[in-house]
Each structure stands twice: as structure tokens, then as C-alpha cells.
Image 1: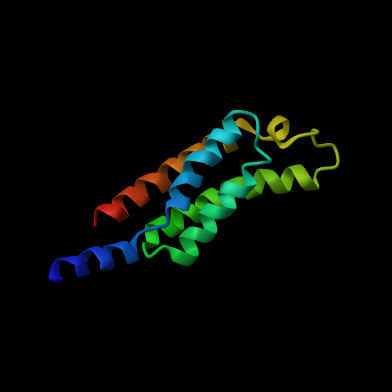
Image 2 (image 1 turned 45 degrees about the horizontal axis):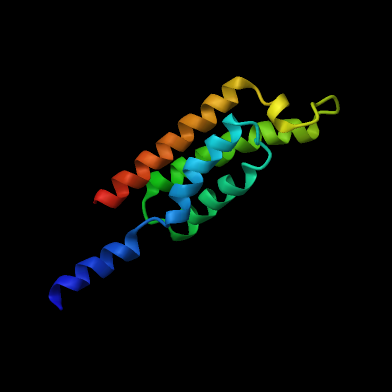
Length: 115
């Protein structure tokens, strides 16, 4: 029984799987033309990392991803002459930022799982 306590303790510290899946899904949706739908995985990654995550780097990476997505989303919503879809309106620099932030989040989750 002494060996199982380490497994339980490690399982309690782990970042939820939904954060990792969302970190993969968000850039995939943005890159394939479904930028508006990427709102859901970005939100899941942020909430999952902040509420259930124990690692500060994972929380920070999730926050960067959320802010990187929220800025073009807000610009698209607030601009009176915006395009019909977020995918058509988003600046390529923000796409790169979202992909990079997602990669950073995945790396942070992986690093947190190894410890």
C-alpha cells in the first residue's frame, strides 16, 4: 500500500486532460478556419488550468493563450466594419501568437506531469 500513495498524490497534482486536449484543439480550429469555435477550447483550457492546475507556469501559459485569443475576438466584435467571421478578420500575427501560446501550454503541462 505504501507505493500507491505516491500515485494518488501525483494524480491529484496533474493538470486535467481537458487542458491538454483544448491546447491542441484551439490552434487547430484557428488554423482550419473555425476561429470563432475556438472560443470553447480556449475557455476550457483557461478554466481547467486556473481551477484544477497546480503549476504556475501552466496557469500563466493558459492565461497567455486566453488573452491572445480574446484580443482579436474583442476587436472583431467591437469593430463596426469587421468581417463576417473571425477567421477572415483575425490578423496573422494573432494566429501565430495563439499557436505559440498553445505550444507553450502543452510544454508546460508536459513538464508539470514529469515532476
